[in-house]
Length: 466
Image (tube, rainbow, N blue to C red):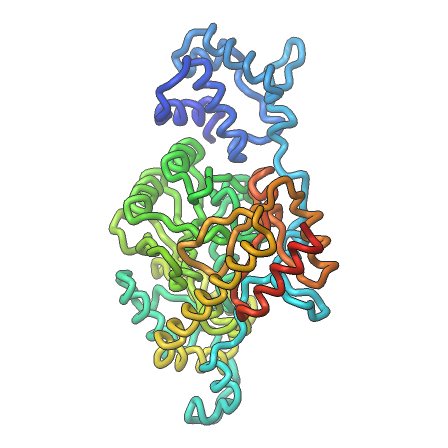
C-alpha cells in the first residue's frame, strides 16, 4: 500500500518547475495530488516531523508548506491531530452517474435541433444495408440461431486486418467483438481496475467512463488538461506518483477534439510501462481527422506497455450500429469474451454480418463521405457562432465530431437547462469534468447534423440559452 509520503516523494522527485522555494514546491505537490483526486477529501497527512523525515527535508520546510496550505484552505487542522485535506479537496459535489450519462443522451421527445448526443445519422451505405439486408448480404439475414456470442469469425478477421493496417500486430484470438465501444470500455475497466484504486482519466472526459469506474469500485484520478489538450509532462508525474491500475486516454479528445503528438504518446506509453499501468486507448473517433493528425496507437509504439485498444463503427457509419471491438493480449481477451457472452449472449449475429460487409467493402468511402460532411458542418457552425455569438470561445478541433465551446461567465448547468427548454438540448461541461471546474462555462457542441441545422441550433442557443 503506497502511503501519502510515497506519493509526495514521487511527485517531488519528478517535479519539473525547479522554481520557487522548496516549501512552495511541497505545497504545490500536495495540491496537485488533491486536485487530481489521488489524495481525497479527509485524507490524513503525515505529521510535520514524520513527513520531514520521510522526504529528507527540514522540519521548517514542511511547517512552512503546511502553513501555506492552511492559509489557502487546503488543510483542516485540529489541536493535537495530524492535518487532513479540507473542503477544497472534496471533489465533485455530486452529479450522479445517471445525471452524467443522461446529459449526453437524446430525450424522449424529438427536439427542434438535437445537440446533446455526439452520434451520427446513418451513412448511405447503412441505409442501403438495412433497406434490403438479404440483397446486401447475398444470403438470408435470418440464418441460424441469430447468436454470435464469441464474435463472427469473418468480422474478427476484418477487424484484425484493420488493426494491422494501423500498425498493431493483432491476431484473431486477441480481439473481442462488443456491443459498441461503451461495452468494450465497461468490460475492460471492470476487469482491470481494482477496488479503491485510482483510474487515471483526462481532466474532462467522456461521461460513459464514470459508470464503469463506479462498477469496478475504483475512483477517478484527473490527469491535467489545458486548452490544447492533455498536459503530458504533468500527467506522467501523476502516473509515477499514484501508479494507477489503468489510464484511459482518447485519441481525438472527447469532447475537446485535441490530439497527442507521436512524441507525447510515446512518452506517456513509456511512463505507463514503468508504472505497470494498463493504457486503455479509446480510438472510437481516431479516423475523424479534421485539421490534425491522430497519434499512433499505443499498442504500435513498442514500449512494452500493457494496452487495450478500443474502437468501433458507430462514429463513422451510424450510432445505431452497435458493433465495437477491443484488442489486448490473448489471455485477457479470452476472459473478456466469456464475460461478454455471459452478459448478453453476444452482439446480434445479423448486425455483425452487416458490420463485416461494411468494414470490408465500404469503410474508406464512407469515412471520406463522413469527414467531408463534418468539415462542411464545422464551417457552418463556426460561421454561425461568429454571427450570433461572437463572444463564445472555441479551439478548432484536430479531429472528432464535436466542439468544446466556452461561454464566458456562463453557468453550464443553467445554460443546458435553458437550451433544453428552447428545443436545442446540449451536454453541459459539468457532465465531462473529473475534478470540479474542469467543465466550467463550457458545453459540448456536436457537428454531425447538416449545416442548416447547425446554424439554426447555434442561433437558438445564442438567443435563448446564453
